[in-house]
Length: 475
Image (cartoon, rainbow, N blue to C red):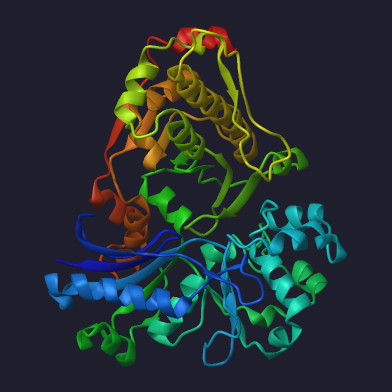
């Protein structure tokens, strides 16, 4: 029974998961993950890469005794984007991994025009202006620790730091590079123009590898660290940025939009184009490299379930979502005049509001108004994504924690006037990465063949009885 070992480094948990050739999760183990404070400022956030690797190995040690290790055909690594570190020739970190949570890069982004205008950055890279992008970390190091940049042998993204620890090979996962704002959206390579204006040598970045390519093999030293000498020689197959593998693992074909619904909602599509305008970037649009070469993932993101969680904490303390959903189901579309502006980020340019509250309105009105507001935001963002990607949606695939809310799912279908297909796969990121790992190891001829064998299924919500009511209210 061929298996892959997926090492999944998330911001909340790190996990080791064994997946078989039919897409079944055979075993998994997790440990909590968190940032450490920076030495210069306790408000700074850094990741301890050595501790993360140690935790991933410990998680693996818990599950490897449950299988025949000779069945493991590949190891792969998936993680959050943008973060990485400068390393020396031996791969030792010269400075800790600056986290995407760290506030130090916000000022860098505001003044990036010292080097290159944000408009030119957007045009070349396709990546939206987010303060956590790799470019701002490197500029911070250039301005604050220039001696390290001069001393550095390479920049490794966090997935490649871990892969180097396992194989001794330095590489750059293409899906990670595509989040950096340092690449050229047209060529698929690091941009000579951007790097030239920053004064950063292109040789700092090791050879780029596509998802599904073999980076190297587990070394004897790494196999001993796992406590399983038989792991030596097992190929480590490139994966990288978790979002790309969640999209592929959801079963999405080209031009089929996917909404990853969690604290943040991330709407993306696998497309052959990403025609982004200044207005698109101002609306939070971006474009990253798809897990498959020659495709892009234009997308947008906004706070989603984070607002629902705020409503729960504020109005439903100690109660569960069953109570909330039962109350929301009794409220008609339009919430009897109660509405919400879902701009709740303290760092945002605008502020949120709840409107239309009068005597007789209840907490259920506020909860339903939040779901309606977020569904309307989804509708406007989907229209923008269709324009950027040059496609017309036939359905929406939904993954993530927010996909568990049946009332919200039906509301989305009614407001979008589209079927909403909720993936019944609980681990779309891990499965997506495993599809590429199986292909890289030769178990399947392609990631698509692996996906077909995994047999992804959906629960579909079709526009229903409230579609006309929403149509008259919001069109």
